[in-house]
Image 1: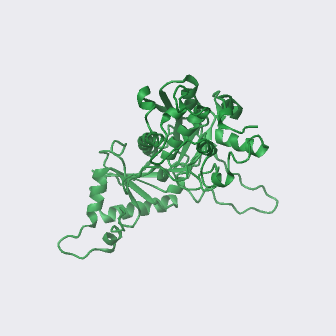
Image 2: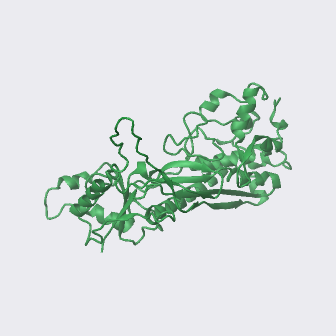
Image 3: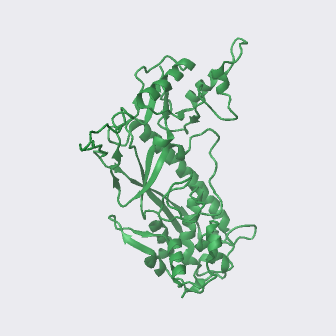
Length: 406
């Protein structure tokens, strides 16, 4: 029976480990494990309150707060409460430190849920990570308005057990035709429709970084200041993921599925007629309208310039469509997004269009993040290692469309 924080040891991570995956890493969800112990009656009532869990306050944070550790506010504790050699060390707090740091990092990614421990990406910002713990609020730093965000490029997020993944390929060059249900005579076999796998595996690479701090800084740094530092790291990692997703959208995931180039490319320049006919052609060929268009700074500026009146003429309906309340828009009203600096679209004289319901798969290797976090406390170092194995797959063959100008 666990009644106090000081009864916890690092062995709890071994107890929390689920079956090992093919890569040898274990699934560890400490908060889930604590809830399981609570349900079994192995944690004293009151140590974890389910009403607070339902509000998004994790068991880890509840236990720390119950033992007097202030995680935020003007009087937040310093990291010294997690270091055994310090005078204000709280016994057992060092055990929960890796899980707390992981939560803070994931809050920076906007990982959260309205119903405590959901695993499906039901709302923008939800994702599937080894540790499914959310804070009370979304701690993401906002991207500049009208800049593309990762949720617009990703349709589904999944966890896998290795560093290679084969996506299900849905060849939709004639979308809406070859997949129609066919008229079948009584007693005849029903027609068979096949979803094949990609010829090549999509590689999932490890991305990570280390946070190192001098011991004197660590013992004086407030916990909520550390949260801000991790939030900044999450912001930078979010930009990297956006860059990678844009590249996969344009060049494909290694299975010969790059974006479909408009046959009329390159056009002389962007005009209302050219852009209107482009999106119309996409809708006609794929039976799926695009709901996002993106370009680099130069191309977005050129498109935005189409809305300006010329020679004292009244604005046309298309120009008026582009004056949406603070949002960038194409002449037909489709949201226009700005790609971050340094992306594959930079200086490409290219526009990328897609439908957010048929975009990319974000693939995360299960267990790839919390394992790195655990090394910090296990080794008693002053360096925090953060990593995740992640990649992007493109299941729909013509889901991304491009057009270029001269």
